[in-house]
Length: 110
Image 1 (cartoon, rainbow, N blue to C red):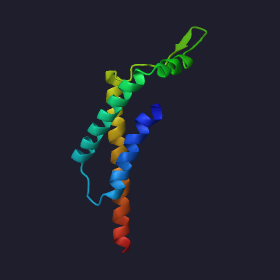
Image 2: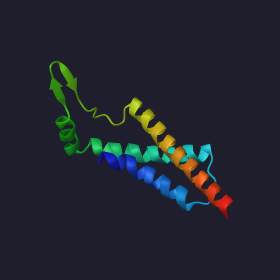
Image 3: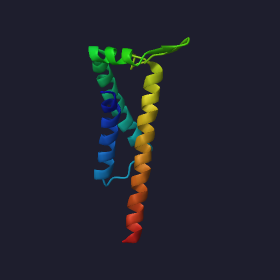
Image 4: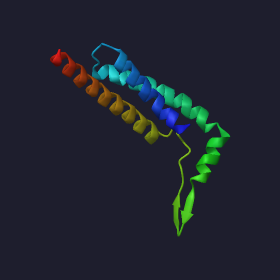
């Protein structure tokens, strides 16, 4: 459930970058990250409304010797949104750099 919210957009970006012959720039990476964010918001809303999610979050709550740890159930908090934008952008940017180097390497060897 949670991994799908992160992995699906990254795999989609990976696939688009692999299949495309176009050279991407920073603006297109931001554009991809924006669509990933929209996917994240829609998925987070549906996950937060799922009763199994609250049950899952309560199982990861732990208290021991005055130390208390709980899972944040607000997937749409400001800090979470900022993290997700940076996460999607960074991963897509790194994938782009990897494929740009790979394409340049193959072009030099031909």
